[in-house]
Length: 188
Image (cartoon, rainbow, N blue to C red; front, top):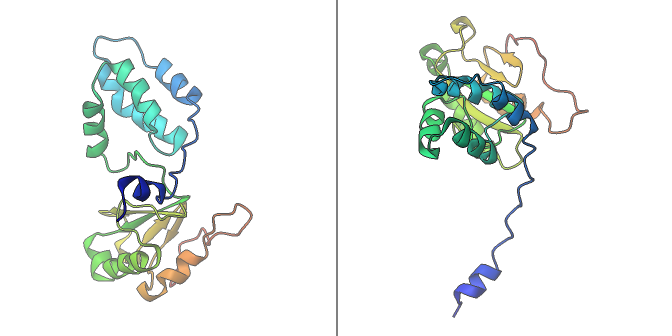
C-alpha cells in the first residue's frame, strides 16, 4: 500500500523559476503619470511590460497591483479579455494561425490538428520545449494567400496543410541555426 509520503517522494521535482529582474518593469511603472484616474494607464502599461518580458510575470503583476491599488482579480480580468496578453512565458516562436473563413475553408483546422499531433499544443498552449506557442487569429489580412500563418516574424501563405510539420521543422531553439525564410512563401 502506497502512502501519501511515498507518492510525494516519487513525484519529479518541480522546476524552480528563476527570479525575475524587475528593473524594466519598475522603469515602465515609474513613467505612469500621477493622476486621479490612473487606471486608464493599466492596458498600455501591461502592453509595455509584455514587450519588455514577452509575457507578464507574476512578480510584475504584484507591482502593478500595488501601483494601481487594484486586486489581482481586476488585473487578470483585463488580461483575460485581451488574448495577446500572456501570463506564461511563450515559446521562442509564436505561431499566429489564421482561423478566418478563407483560411479555415482552405485547411487551417488541418494545420492546427497537425500542430497538435506533433507538438501536443492547442490554441493558447506552449510546447514543452518552449519552441512554439500557438495562437489563432480571426484574420491576418491576406485571404488570397489562405491558409496563412505568421511564425515569429515570418509570414507564410498558401500553406499546404500536409507540409505543416516540415515547415515548422525549419525553426530551431538554438540561435545559430537558420530559421525559415522571411518572405511569404508561394506554396509550402
